[in-house]
Length: 290
Ligand SMILES: Nc1ncnc2c1ncn2[C@@H]1O[C@H](COP(=O)(O)OP(=O)(O)OP(=O)(O)O)[C@@H](O)[C@H]1O
Image (cartoon, rainbow, N blue to C red):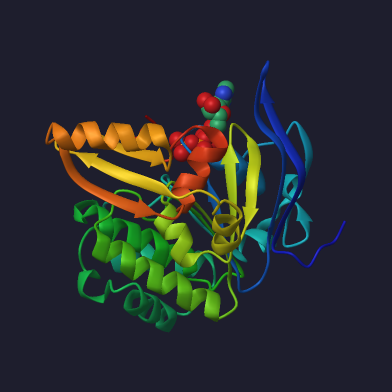
């Protein structure tokens, strides 16, 4: 089947022995769109990416990349996609520039493009440094530089800003938005709802291998906007998200009388809270249900 979508999966499923880790996942990434694939640890995000990029075979269902079955991807398809994952092979003993030069040769990309990409990822000043001594944020930007060197149609990112400082994360967000503006389709996985909220045109919430909600961030939040919530941070750092009900009022009153409360906020549901409501699990394990 041919499709105009850059990525398309239909009823994609994967099992290991008795364990179903992906269950009928339908996913689509179009040109000029950022699609966020969100879910807690073990939800199946990396498994999906591995199947889509041809590194793993599904148990059933279909996955297409640029219209080609992901089980039959060839070099011409790989030359049109960029992939950023943990194991994006960077040569530690080579300089930043030489890492890019090596891939530029492989991918038939001009050296003027290396300079352009170094600039866009704000890595020009580090061009002579050996990749092995780069900081985490610089390494991530080098991996990203390498992934966009050949101006791919599709960029796939597994946790692109995980563990990075806010400034570097924000620089990466800016770059991703520019790439989208130029028509690139981007699929990213993240635990970070704020990141998804800011960047993504479409969000898929994945839990235990199933898509439990999808749509724009706003549409998802509006759908669950029925009940007001209170976020309470206690002085001992316990962090609660509580429904607006009599029981909560009693709880808050008691905490206040015992001078245990650091902050209280009334809030509309964030994506994080929607996820918690649907699944009973938090993406960030520091929010607990009382
Ligand atoms: N080779 C394997 N054999 C058995 N189970 C596996 C194998 N690889 C992955 N799994 C299981 O598949 C599930 C999904 O894993 P996956 O790596 O896709 O999750 P994830 O959503 O990417 O999580 P994280 O956010 O922690 O990276 C997990 O329960 C994992 O233990």
